[in-house]
Length: 345
Image (cartoon, rainbow, N blue to C red; front, side):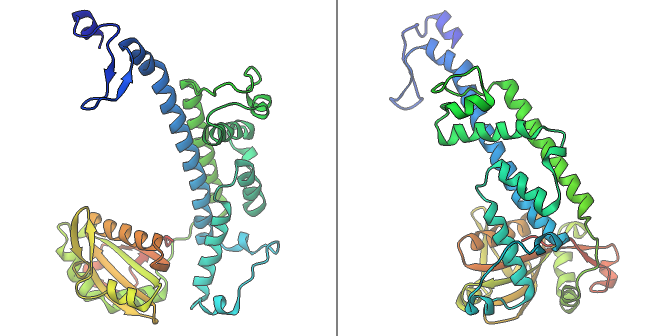
């Protein structure tokens, strides 16, 4: 733009339009340059700070599921009463499904909570004290409070925020997120996340276990088809294998998603489930277990499709295990050389 001004292609009073439209982006080149140097970077930093805090909240909620996979002891405290109707209670076909429901309810209870709520919860439930992290709790609270001002107050500082975090500002002033503050804030959030991960690893160590007998038996039953699918992958050593256990909302939905013509999409390209399906076993009117094997992008797209069904309410319960196979798989498929990582809910 500076070159266009110098060449006379545009003048200091030329309106700057959005390309291919009649909408005015700026009323002069000087106004646009000023926005590009000051306003737009400020808006971008504010948006990214909001995103960073949201990601931190999601991480702290997701960490509950990870802890529950390792130990249910912290969730057995007698400080919470949960009630179910008889119909609700009888709808859980196994104790595992009831446990999963309770943990997910615990996670949902933390959605939308403030930083201080997370701090109290982690200390009470897991004995993880945010105050012992490398970052001062007050600094993280300040980051969350800035997000709150940006999202819920249009970025306008009120007296309460001024007193706690910005004494030099005045009520009604627009909150600014400087580049230095943004970089420091993201580092502090990362440091707190790493601290939590380390504490979880110390307090609730991950067990590396042999596959639970039901999964091992399932894999053994369908070992030949699993073997065949694995060899169809361009590089069999990197074939991705997942075992699933799910409850559909209705028997009709289950039947539709496991018919001979059942498909899912990879981008815009439909893909037949039967091309990655190693085996399936109906366990109830609305429940089924199944095993898939294929290339990473295809299996990943299928898992994304199942997550979509879950969000739409078509899947009421959904559990998966990533199956890790040792080198002896080809000659000893289905034997106790099969191991699994912790399930992903």
